[in-house]
Image 1 (tube, helix red, strand yellow):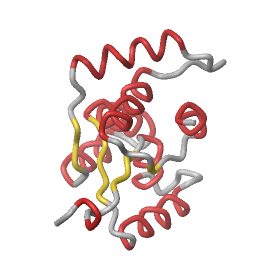
Image 2 (cartoon, helix red, strand yellow):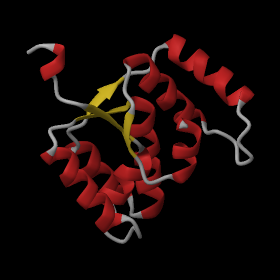
Image 3 (cartoon, helix red, strand yellow):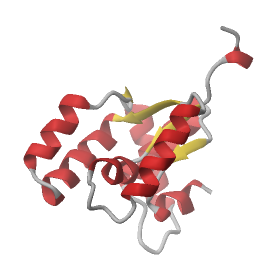
Length: 134
């Protein structure tokens, strides 16, 4: 397969994963529709190991440990493991962020990884992540 024929790639944020998994999440229906659209468009979806850790914690706190365990058992996203270099760049990004809320470490690593891999598309629900990505 040539570069021109490769499927598009999108990063998947914790906010989107939680919205997909938690049927009571206010963004669940929209997240399901977006996920189906990405699948139909042939996107390759990936996340990071830090996002997986965040998702498990959010699910543990929000929907319970069994849902978190089921997610870990059933999830099929490709997982990129952040390197020390990725994390060092993320720390610098957090330290220089002008966000009034503060850029999370996980989001910073995600943005660094997206840039490193040349990925411009992201499946997110969290508007803070979107603001930092621009």
